[in-house]
Image (tube, rainbow, N blue to C red):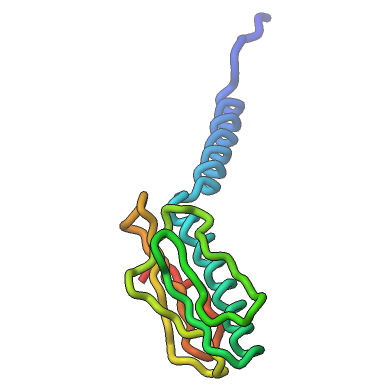
Length: 141
């Protein structure tokens, strides 16, 4: 009796299924890098705004945040306090004329700023606060 050589249909289906699962896993792990950059910058900006807000409340001074050129600045920080003034990715931009008031009052008016990137201008990320809750990224408007 001679034995047939080759793979059975079941073996081929198992291999194809494993390849399909691996391909799906790789595709899901590869996110849009433009959106990832904006999300990273949005989370960092929200943390920096909350740090500025905390310093404004602790010192009782008015602190303002505004975008300048390819970065941003905090005006009114107490002496000896410094916060970063540059984006992690130099292509990050903010809507022109955005100024956020960070305190010293515990309740602030609702505020929002819109982040974008020069490589992907169609993608946008909003960082906002309703005045009571902390600043947080809000996704695409």
